[in-house]
Image 1: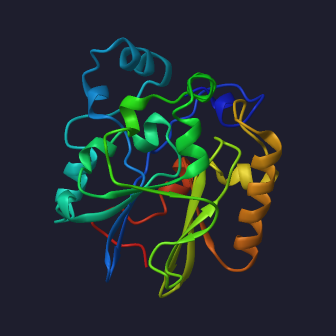
Image 2: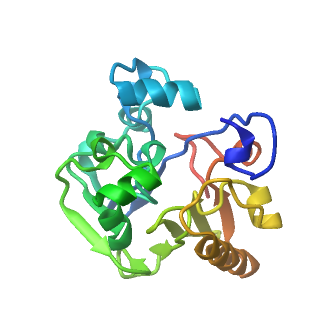
Image 3: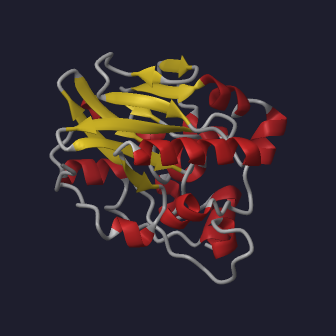
Length: 239
């Protein structure tokens, strides 16, 4: 993608990962984001052809969500919760592969993603995320299992109802930032992307992420290729 999409005013291109996360909890498995729509592997619709021209995804058969889970010996049908950070195509495009899970999304995001004007201005498309899932529409912070181990954290600004996910591991807390914080540089310099929904809300969200980092949380940046090189890749676990 053009680098300016991630760091306003910068020239050149950036090659970036599109991550999804599997969380195993005693009360059920959780997915945080679902990645790309498999139709982008061989795009036929006008929209998907436009996406491949604009964003140039490198996405081949065997890299889709269900295939990745299979290599982890996980049956996607047994995933209990699917949490979307937000409803852009690279975070919710795989939702239709996770048919049995309850979809957990901020009410603000779901509402925006069904209002025609906001659909257009925020780059939403119903074909990515609206597949008849049972819904948990939440408002603000949400403790998924009521034990503090998996907590949705509102980080609005990138989209109207963006959320990050705080996960407690034996080694401490991890924050899966999603697009609230694309890159390490986004957080360190408060260097915002060119396109976003609300600049002030995004700045406030970044300050909240900084506070979590100062308190000891490890931040998993949304699309930072350099950072991603340091992350264990499935089926290896983050510990």
